[in-house]
Length: 297
Image 1 (spheres, rainbow, N blue to C red):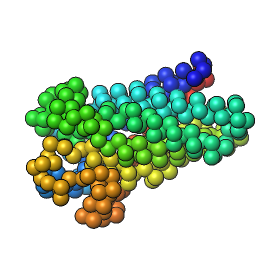
Image 2: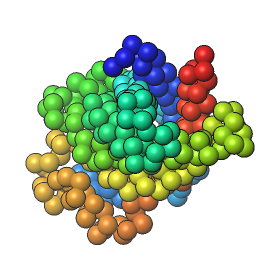
Image 3: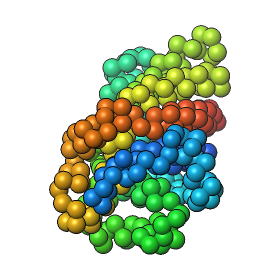
Image 4: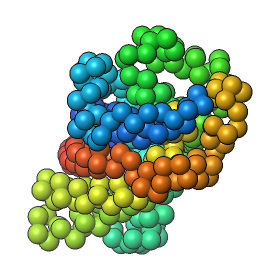
């Protein structure tokens, strides 16, 4: 890695944290919607929320505004690792291809390959922070018995003690797959749109805004089903395994997929799609505008 490439990692992590802080409440509503109907403790998790707005309102009314930020600590920690590695690796790999292989900026195959590699690598490394985030988001602030005071370190200790080191990498398969899908759609689409819109807008904020919005829409469509699966795998507590038996716990990604479709239908794989896109759009807009600005300094 050349010395001049390191700022890309720093810019990626910083921009990711700002975007995460700005849109996190929407992500919390998405998580709550995705775990509705999930089999937990031998029974279905009841359907409580009718949609994104209803989920946001009920969480705010019943648990308080701060509940919408449950899990923000591991989320920011995740962005410091996942965001830095993902965007830094992608643009470094792409730059290497452009410089040494004489590839053009809008070479879709090269951009796709660089993006999927960066997504899988970064998500696999940052998976423990994702598990902590999902657990705290699902729990909210009304159930204090399991993760006392929502302390991220106590949550980490609880998972490690009761589920072992493997518990922190629960759902790493679908998480890395999701990250690979998102990156392989989001980053190449953004770069392609940005390149094509240069003729109209130039390297201006309006170009970054439109390109990131288009990239968000397609990545939300591609990633939502696997996002539902990984969220459910991360949310299930391994300590329930011996209590409720194999019939009421997901053994892995395929088992989770089959049971979700069997008991809730195909469209259950798109639970939380609206908040996914509503969050992904502003998240990417904020990220790319800040990232592009930092790169121009």
